[in-house]
Length: 253
Figure 1 (cartoon, rainbow, N blue to C red):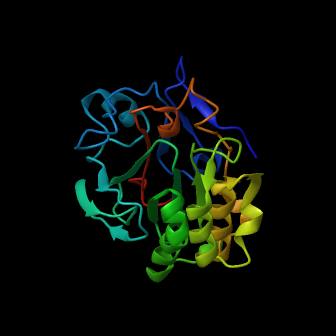
Figure 2: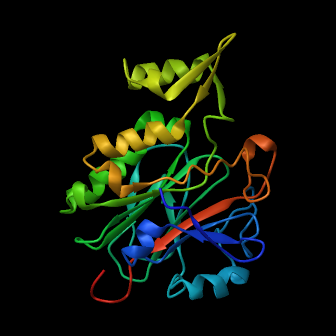
Figure 3: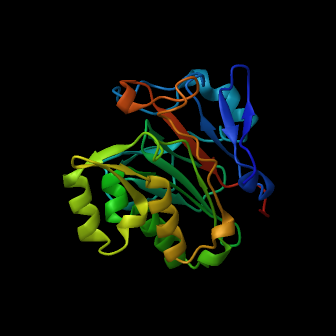
């Protein structure tokens, strides 16, 4: 897997080479990206201080569309910027319109259909993973006429199996949603504790929805380990990371 392309000193964001090569404007922020609202604050995830860097990556033609994230699996089809209601995945076919999700341990995913010219951004915590939000986003793109085997996906910085300890209530939900399958996503620590691999769970959901494994990029950047770069809810951080993409304004991908 190609290493993420970090930009800035200290690094303020990075790009995914898989999406770069496909010509999709996008970025994943670090804790050093300017103009990001604190996680506890209402309003857009990216303010005036972010506009210069967004513009440098063709992500400032319009205000970003975003949701009040509720740890579910609903997918909103958006055609204009600003607050777009509740949900945990957004998709758009409007060139130049950025779609954004924010996180601080949960798994952000960008999906790109280069042939159908559609893009989606997904927020998948353990609750969203149990409900299959990543697969739901792939299905939403398919229902618009896309072919999943041609889609591209990039998984952003999120808490890894090295740091994400869960207890029995989470395992019960996983077992109910994925009987006989969730065992490969966890490692028992004993005493009713497990280490959960949300990356593996979401990658499997993307593949089961029809995507090819070689078209899913995951640099495995752990928010729990990399406090120098990322916020982590479990570490007590109040900031948020933003994952954002927009269809290119040009007529071809």
